Length: 488
Ligand SMILES: [Zn+2]
Image (cartoon, rainbow, N blue to C red):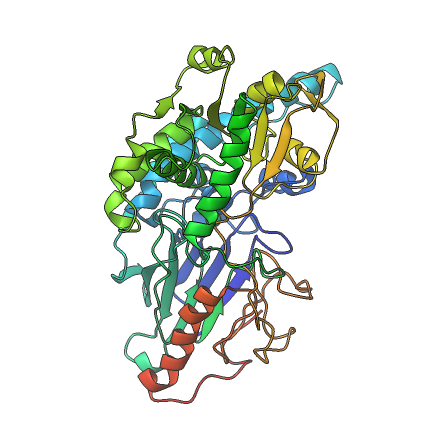
């Protein structure tokens, strides 16, 4: 059995996940994500795929984040006619996130084309529209965790909870020649892997017996201090109490999916236990409101130690759906909390709130996630004394604070490079591992001849160690060595 894996995205960058698997019997993708971040990366979304969409027989989707799912509507629009396999949680989230992404692209192109016309340039068309995204949702097929599905003849797959996001999965792929099952090749596509003690998510599950692991390494080149849920909550409580003493708004820019729900759960719990002053919590993002409904609907699949249903239904929450409701928040005085997208302050309703409060010494901005270079969030973190929002220069008098405890990704972890896997044979995707950047970004995959794979956390390493340790025993053969299998 021969399998070729081609890395069509998430190489030298953390976005645009897309891996093309080819066997004698067909072709399928793992993920089909949007490139995000700098302009040069975003431009990749407008180019042709490095394959013919009509030649792809199926897609295995690890999770709903746009950098993993965001080009699926483009794939369908350009001729893909197969099934997109995903968990029900992922499908529910995609059913809001993909149309939202289509609508953002339509409005971005509208703005861009106004400029293009003024400068005598050719107008461009959106990567896909909201209607394309809705059409693409028809191709989704639900899968259950831990149950085999047939992908193409001779290839089957099984989804395991990756503990990263509602519905997220590491996907076990088995490619066999049919009768000669001993010659099958087993591969794990990790998707994004959650960190230890992630709020709302159970720990990642541990499948076993793989020849290859394609592992994410978004934070593979760094290590963050281990944080327990109690420590994270205590840090948040400290920030909220400080903000309350200033008697103005506490603005929390947050990603609409998962990060927002984690913050709500922590804030409501802290208020219910009187660890912080009670105050209205405005959820000012239509997508975040939809995502919160999805979390309520899938509460049974989340961490059983958290009463998600009760906390996400708290009377302390105010959902502001319309623009008018959003604008009404601006009239409020006194301590209140506003959670709004985007997480890096470069778009969305949070910019209106920042314009209203940044100049005011009573205001507080709490940044809870990664702030990419060039974004408004990064300028604030870096101590800018004035920023431009919607054409206006605004002095920064509000207090700017950060918390780095709400990441959805595993980090490098101690000993991540002690595995004896030479850097030219073992490469992560979606990032880097400690001390090096992968230098050959395309058409590489790596073999787990050692249980410790670079660039993953302690939880993820446990997950992968089980995989490798069981491999030899389960299959009655010595652990595989590097270099076997097909590669191009
Ligand atoms: Zn993700």
